[in-house]
Image (cartoon, rainbow, N blue to C red):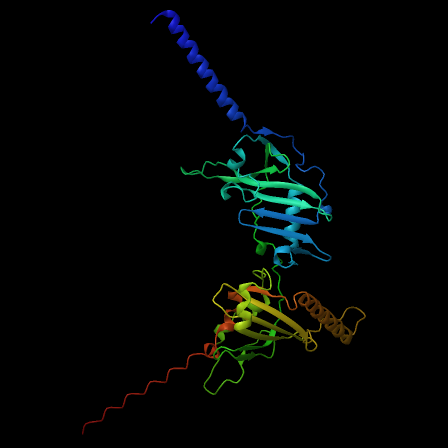
Length: 396
């Protein structure tokens, strides 16, 4: 090969190599994470109190929380009260976001960082979670997409990878050329409406009487007791019928711990059918002078449809008389204690009034005891005493 041709080949190889190196460096530059000055807020001076609406949209659903007259509500659940603590926590996290690094986004980078705006126009795995904050007039105050988690490898990470989640990539919808790495992980950023409703339900105090009525089988029974914490007695128990108290050991905590799992999508929600077709009524009289009537629908689902009503039936059980304060008679101390008991009772009535007539879904495990028939509460009959063996006859 002549020297000139060899020289040309060397020059061509160098040019190709240079172009490849340039393309590689340009590609890497599109993923180059650049540090950001500490303390800078991603959304500037967003005023938290101006936020009146929070809209979440993800590949698996949407949630709209709005500030109502008295409370925040969830639109997708018939304006049912929202979990205010959770909504306010999210708004505060968004307002206080501080980017630690910026990442210029080239073609395909949005998908790689799961930052595509979820509008139903792409594969679900590439879509992030859209968070929009608006004021009372509907003006958007902020609109971001939360995407892929950022993980930091650790020495303990195995051969399959792994590590600790230390942040998340986010993108401003109005500035899709740049992603930001923030230290907030948004671990509870879910787009199912049931995760954002207020789960607090009416929680009766210590019950003194419970009556269960059902149209199915022998599901009608009543239990009573005379004082808080005393053992239960089965009303109408026969001579040889004894209540199996072990089956009622947790009934107090079940009743006082009632919680909501979800709220119907609307009045035509198919999950409400058992409430009309197979209703079970539980009347709970408490030592506070309140009567709760809980009606739920029997089915094999994990969450059962239910609704509740409450009324005042009398005065609370007189509380223990406290030691009189200085200058106070025992009678005055007792009257003050009773006044406090009535106030606590009235607060429960006010709480129940917010849920009066509303239909909700309660986890089945809270209602399992009320699904059994009367026989299931009875102790097994005692085994008859063994007949003694006859004495052997003596031989003469």
